[in-house]
Length: 117
Image 1 (cartoon, one colour):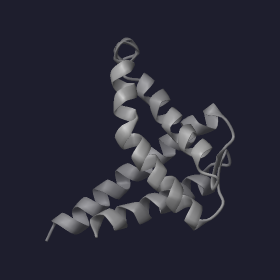
Image 2: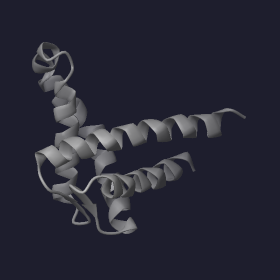
Image 3: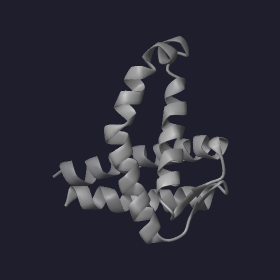
């Protein structure tokens, strides 16, 4: 149940990103659901490998290169899903930052709702 709730909230967060920033477009809630699932898979499988491979650059930039990796994951999801469109790398960077902040808020709220019983 928690997984489905988080997935639905992630899709809503993608819709919010599209509403807040014009560089990201989501065609429908169904497209947002698919894009949220693809983003989850990419962040689970590909992102750790990229973080490991770019560790020297990440250390030299004091962790700022992680923003680039997040933007690449967001951009890759947009290229894989037809319901999510990102106008360029800059839009992917800003969209991934907004999405990350929304995901942080979702995690906080879900932790409060589901575990404070």
